[in-house]
Length: 300
Image (cartoon, rainbow, N blue to C red; front, side):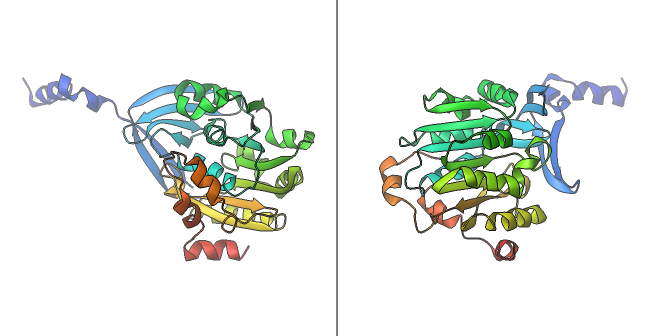
């Protein structure tokens, strides 16, 4: 028997069969740097009217939802994004009865909002119904809020929904994918003005505002626009290991309430929510930014 044949037999022996599965996922920023993960399982791969949708699994992060080639959610990321985009403004607004979420088809933000008993109604406006369907199938913990009687799912373009609606909201959350494809219009100044017009006099808008490290030009443009619309605009950040640079930002935009001065300690203590990432220290600490981020947004 040749040495080559011995090597081949050893390679394909039962104890080494795992080596034959060699599938990797990479998400790169400008084709230069990014995150690479070994994929243990591909649970689903399909295409909706708007985008490609995959559900993959990795040893460290568990199941992950991928939209148009970008990671959106993961089982094992401590739910940081969903908790930060929701609980932080909900513990600032004095009476957040009517909440609107635009985007967020994985329903994670919706589920977090329903943990607040004073919410009267939370409307989720998602353009791609397929994302909701796949999330219900693969991420039941994220989507359980859909069963709440206060939850209202609307399948529609978020821009059109707000332009056609005359409803007023206390809190609007822009839980958007990146500013490309169907979400691109939702990052523009005209849309932010529409959101402001649909907010009550004490309303708050929170929008995901990309990576302050990778997306600096986009961040500057977003905050420049927002500062022309809202009296109070503050950036806060969180650790998101599956997002580019793992350093992610949110824009807190308010007509009256200050996110630091108006934190509702009484409500926070009363609810005593069992969360994975957000807490009172994180609430305040998330607004403390490194100097390069201060320079970025102060000069908008």
